[in-house]
Image: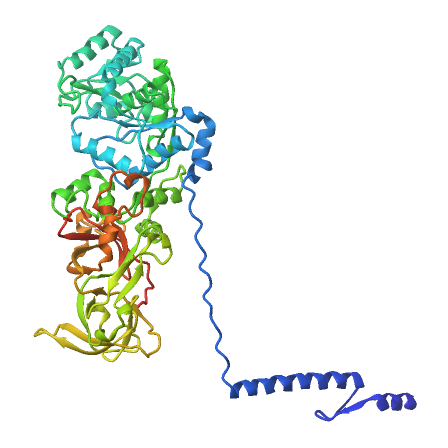
Length: 629
């Protein structure tokens, strides 16, 4: 036993650092570990003595956005399933049927894009049909505006039709319904009709009035008396005879014709009775051979009465399907509220750039392609959606980023005198500026380097600070595309203490400046710039205490009357439209002169512009870091 222990100890070796007796293998591992540690510490010590070389932080390549497929909403999802129900190929016919009683708003753009786009995608055609059955509120200006907007969005109707063209045929079908005992003339007032439909809460038994029991001859005579002007408005109306026991209110003997002694824009005084939407819509779809009648979900219940009417008349039956509409936060789009804003002079008119009518968005400079791209990006489902204004504006911004040129604009000009401008070489006294750093096809233009240039007042500070990177006394800043940065040497003030002039020199030997600012040369064009912000203060103006007018933003428009724009503007104006979208190729207004004002926003010319005076509207702001100084 003792011999065995002695033999084991003899095989152990001393670890001099710890004083332990360990095996030869264990000692070898410990020594290797300590050597590695010592090597690391030596390297670390050496690095501390010598400054480490700077790492080149190469910017990560910006991932290009995948362009949105303009036909994606027809290839899959709700609209693809609708087509599969009735695959009609080149025989596809849709219609866009606005009421000509107001200006179209952003929500209507979705209906236009869906109906025209659906037919185009399948090789078919689309009619623009005016549902002009209410002469009380229809005006010629609305007809004209709707046609212009549809074309501006890039769509050409196969035909422009009018429901009023079918008044004779619609009347004949109404008499047919009476003969089939599927319609009757009623004299009930609103209160009586409400009782027939279940009372105020809808809990009472439903029933038909006594007029439903009239014979065919009586109903025909009364209906003809309505036609001949023998009844005053609301004294009589024609009702369908449907299914009063149905769970769908659209089957509760709804109105088909009413008396309206009003002059009609197209038919004059020929008619004193007019068909309702429910009488007109489905039957006129049938007359026009519409294959897919696409409308919003508010008409979902109407599908039953739509199908009932065409079946009852034994005429061709189009297919109605409904998609979800969208609303935008922070604005109003009802005709009544918009009219109040216009009438009470809160805005310049129906096309005021702060509104969301399509004529207002056009005047503001929003390109038609940006609107269509936004709608396609949203997709189409049966759900109604509420969209934040910021999402719409971001979609516009993304569209403009790659499609409009860049220019230099100064909102609040401050005079800069370059004291050593004469020292520039001849080749440096004019700079070539690209219209787009991302698209060489836009070309370039020349900007002269004059002894006096102008920057924005906000880009100069009398007192410098560490977190400020623009121009200040003794400080250097770059002027975009200028051969050299400049250093401010002195400044002057007027009697009110406002800085009126800064004197500066070129810094030809210094290091690259941290910041570059825009400038314009002497002799640049004076322009008026209108910066529009949200018209309302909250996301839901309708919920404001005291009504939506109490939510008006008093600072929704700032006007810069003495702004200056660089000479490249003249070429941008001449080469408009920017971009050359389908709806603006043949006909375009001043709003098609669009550009990005570097470091400020995207702008377009306003319709108030003349040859001598240019007025600009801000389309959307630039996306900038919140902490940008």
